[in-house]
Amino acid sequence: MQSKITGGATVKIFSGKILGKYQVDYFKCLDTGFIQTEEPYWLKEAYSSAITKLDIGLASRNEHLRNVVAGIISRHFNINAMYLDYAGGYGLFTRLMRDNGFDYYHFDPYCKNIFSEYFELADSGKDSNFELVTASEVFEHLPDPVPAIREMLRFSDNLFFTTELQPEKLTTIDDWTYFIPETGQHVSFYTEKSLAYIAHQFGRHFYTNGVNLHMFTAKELEKNPFEKEQIPFLIRTMKRKVERFFRAKNSSKESLLQRDWEMIREKLTS
Image 1: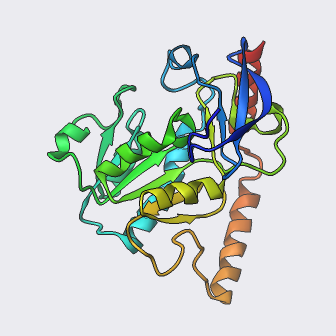
Image 2: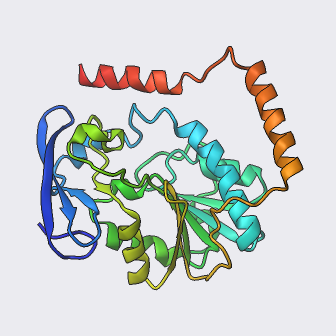
């Protein structure tokens, strides 16, 4: 099987059961380490619902990304320009960004827009030249990444996206929860090297936090936008004290997100 990133050779690394019934092979690109499934014939079934039952972190993820993206826009882009959220699901991220004053629009032909009606791509009055396109948890869903990314870059020279980079030493499908075989929607898994390869293909600069936040951009930035700003020692000290105070104050209430995710996953596999 050829690599969907380079067109070069791959090697089968393991198999796993998708949707609880399909035995599927996983292949690794020998040049970049990118992992792909065999041709995903099960996707129609996997997308019977665009948002899976296991994606219970959708709300908190979008709330967190609102702050991350707002900061990047404020530091590196024109805050008064127009922005597009690609494959934006229910439209929550577009709504949150508009609530923060950014002229954001939503695009997702496969999912009902609940939160940002009247702010669809068609309502923007344009079909390209957005200041920045965002794509949250999209890349891992792409059965053929390069053409899909080319389509995203048609809308803008700049693309911010999230996807989890592979950990080291993956030997079985059980070594990484991000494979999520229970839903069958994750079919492409990236390394930093594979994303750098794609950026080079499209003539873009590549920036990453090395974990899950990434950007392809026509701009050569003075520094990695994901590097944390250096905060003076006294401010860091006070910030830690305030954070410790509020953690202690709220220590009796712990997020149920992980517990709920594990419970739903168990129900899907039982």
